[in-house]
Image (tube, rainbow, N blue to C red; front, top):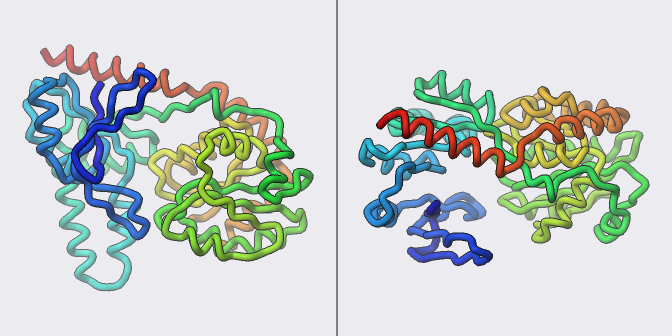
Length: 348
């Protein structure tokens, strides 16, 4: 199993503990926070293919890597995992911001992206929402496989009053948690707009926001009673304990291809208030463990939180049931590998 990802240059990241190294090719950072890179170094991938002769190649981004995969020999099973949807998350919102030329350029780029993916032997996606989008665009061979979960980390556990006090929170009052990237495509603007209304509810909830991104400074600067900005949590145990110690998870993105943080909340035994869209909203709807609100509406967001607060015990029970039945990462990868080998063996 060989991993190639974008980096500052070509090299190898040694992980230790018996893990194979991650190879890096040249990647260009993008976004206001520069926290993502696009791989622009197909020659690094060519070298791995020449030296290692892989049976299966999986593409994890929809951009130039997808174009490169179209040139691979047919004997290699070419697969793609639709981790992000550039149509709904990036280019379509960008095209709506005024100038007509943006719509034209957006359509041309998306047409290219679509053409690059129609040659794949298999396209994985993690939600029915994404599968429907891809099939409507004429993508062939779309199959759904849900992300797994680390159940050793995210599972129901007693609240940690010590951890909450460390962040300046009251363990005896309801806590609403946002844990994720603070970038515009995550819908965080609606969270900022809704904060005054949520904090003024009669049940006097507390709100904690964790994460980093282009809106980090905005959330860090916001000052209100019962509000805490926790920054980016490096310690995974702190994050999992914080999730399990919360009463509700807040999820604002309506274009998640899956919604991993939503699953982590559900598997930790807490309900979720989510935008009614994307993979995150899909999980809340299917599990019944939360409330949904109209994407982009701060007033509807506040109302959804108000409806959810008296039902946290009910939602917690449904979340626990949902999490217990959910596969682990090992289960997911075992299924993915066996399915790819089944297709590959059937071709030759």
